[in-house]
Length: 533
Image (tube, rainbow, N blue to C red):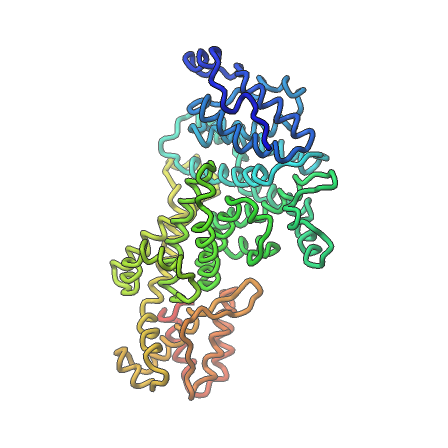
């Protein structure tokens, strides 16, 4: 049972109330804060994970609400002598100090830079020293999550150059390596490699490790910090690559984690939601709609069943927000790939209640439908970033929306390419067998154009998975009796997505053996832009 320390519910003392009237003093440490710091330091030294979790998750939030709603916590210099000036504890305290600034206040540019320096110092200690402590998974996840969030926030802040003061521009010039994208990726990758987490997860499959069974904790007296940070860093890498628009690399970074099974990532609700949200979004952008639908469905069902248990959690609002965003992404996936059978009845009912009318309109592929696709994508997508520093020699302009506009353009371009395919899907559902002439007549196109449309349908309903295999997203499939061999071309097209620069050579070699002119017609349409690869 958790100890009820005096800092949890005790009323503010006269000194604390007097301090609140006078304003913020970074060197003033209320008794309740001193008590929390002293006890937290002691429990970290004793590796008392349960008490650390209670103080981190409950007591720190309670004091923040009571004493520091609109001010920072006392400075690290003011509390250092209470913890014997312990370097690691001071770095951890400062990490929480900056996180409080981001959550409750608006950080200055100098605070953003100082937070980067603190993360560098903390991560260097973890990577290159022996850190003999155990921290709750929640704290370790928050560390990785906040690190990526502050990187994203800094990129967005730096990209708004139009109203920057001369002092801010001078600081950006001076600290041009702060929150550098290579530095962020290198730290996350260093955690993965130094922790040997990939090898640990492989050995666990052979029964040689108990990482998941123990939720990453070391019950033999060792430390869980490096291993669990390495584990969560794989999720962090997925998130960073999604922010950069590199979905293939992001999913590759997550491969060691089997998301079809329970794992350490499911032990923290924030980690669980972040993993599935970015995994699903990356698959959506890579046209792997079935994988995205399957995981969104499982996550939304889980939140539906468990969200009442997180109502008092500091992350509750974020859980609800991500829940709504995933419903919007699921609506997009099902509109592009109608695999309703993959969705549980409870989730489907909630989806129809939220987006039923919009999903019906999205099937029409007119201007109104594209506006809805635009709306849902803009609401549910990550906050994409441009990681490069601005050119200070050119006129200062805001470019914080450039990455988002590019991803939106690519997404809507994909939606427009599928406009003709909705008609094909309708006829395929109605007919078990139909002649090409009859189908061409119904669709009001000539025979060569119909063949091109059918090949496009094959291409757009197939994708390449993480193992390089061609997978189908189609709810209805077909073949043509007299030219069944033609559709082996779809495999060439799907494989060529991984090496698009080789596409002309692939098609040229395929057409060289052409005997009936069908492939030449396809190549002509490709060159004219009727078929998009």
